[in-house]
Amino acid sequence: MVWKKLGSRNFSSCPNGSIQWIWDVLGECAQDGWDEASVGLGLISILCFAASTFPQFIKAYKTGNMDQALSLWFLLGWIGGDSCNLIGSFLADQLPLQTYTAVYYVSADLVMLTLYFYYKFRKRPSPLSAPINSMLLFLMGTACATPLLSAAGPVAAPREAFRGRALLSVEPGSKPFTRQEIIGFVIGSVSSVLYLLSRLPQIRTNFLRKSTQGISYSLFALVMLGNTLYGLSVLLKNPEEGQSEGSYLLHHLPWLVGSLGVLLLDTIISIQFLVYRRSAAASELEPLLLPS
Image (cartoon, one colour):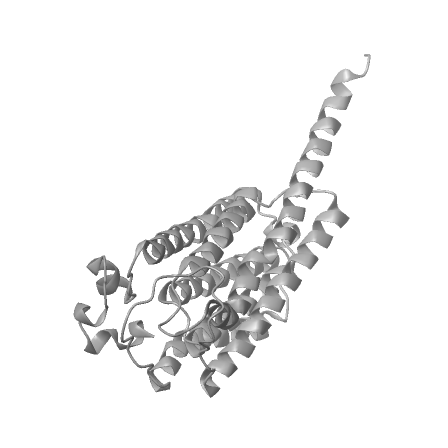
């Protein structure tokens, strides 16, 4: 893709480039309105993801029961999915905004997981703290070292001409997978599975507690909005020159499933928020309604 050669090329390498700052800042070639919309939605999605964690941090500080409200398996599945997403994005030659979003994912997950164990061990110290800290350091090291993997991969050839987006294109152009992209595709697929599985423990935890107390709904609401915009940004991007619509979607399929597929499960969690908060409100009003 063009963006991988940003350091050695200039804006003239972007045929029909419409906005130079997108090339200069993001290293992405926006050649028409579809590409510009893709970049715009991608940037908004990053803002949604960035804002989603802060309400949970504030909620954890106020209630101090983050270790009871959030499922550990939910957090581990989330950080596992985000770590695979980050590695897969580099190896599978994904869009720049996908990679930048993945970097933020891992950083925010590490903070969330650190807060979880902080509140857990503050109440009851555990001999497992040392192995857990080692695991966190390993994950941070992996996240920091992953960008170096992209430098060793082959650089794709520049586009020779621009072809506008043709929805539901059936032309035979098919971009073959390189070995590195196959590895990235597999890791991205694992990431999607982890994303889907991570919601199930949280749904179960909410069901067993019959409560969502200690969880900020803004966390899931903003993640849902971010995932929707993230998926749309990928779908609106123009395929590479000579690449069919089907081939483009295939190359990005794991990331589309990971972003759009979890919306259904997050909707279930949203319903739990609605049901359990109504139940809690009714329980609080019941003593007031009883005759004295």
